[in-house]
Amino acid sequence: MKPLRNFFIALIAIGSFASITPANAQEAPDVLIKRISTDVVESAKADQEIHAGNQKRVLDLVEKEILPYVDFQRMTALAAGRYWRQASPEQQKQLIAEFRALLVYTYSGAISQIREQTLEFKPLRADPSATEVEVRSQVMQTRGEPAQLSYRLEKTPAGWRIFDVNVLGAWLVQTYKSTFASEISKSGIDGLIKTLSEKNKRLAGKNRSQSALLESRL
Image (tube, rainbow, N blue to C red; front, top):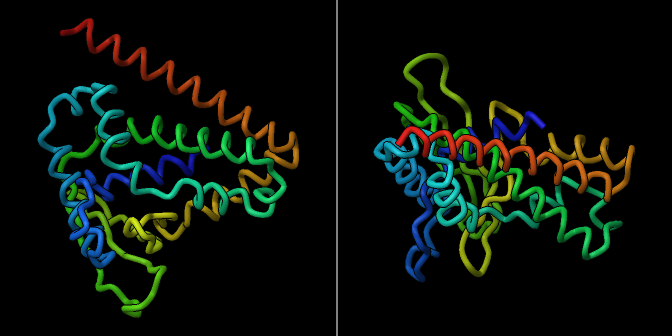
């Protein structure tokens, strides 16, 4: 499931999400993305424990500050496509949980790589009354070409929520739609859930090993 790697590189630019108040819940989507993106880059650059590979520190950051602002239910439903309607409520719940966990574990490895990246944002092209928009940006690196990033957001009663990410021209949902469909065609929805679960167990074990190694050096 290599597309996840690109997703997490993109999420690096999403940011350290501050708590939403009634005031900033009404922020324009491009203003929101710019504010939280800048926060996370600066926070990660300043955190030496993240640089050292403290997985618990990274996981705490991801769980508390980032994931509440990603609409995993919609993202999972879109990735599952027509199979989403065929899944039982319990299967849907499991798919969301496993997909969310997979994003968490994979992202924890990418966030520690933030060093000298800077962000550049494109003007928002959307009707003021739009409830779904695309915010475009790119990550400027000290070496190599800028990395294109785009975010699809939906306006909800709680504020804008991200439900898809584009990295270098590839939308995450579309990429995973074919991946999920292939797995479901071979072993059904339960087979996809099992595959995601096994992947998460391996990643969880890897994270525990890395944390133990770090603690042994302290």
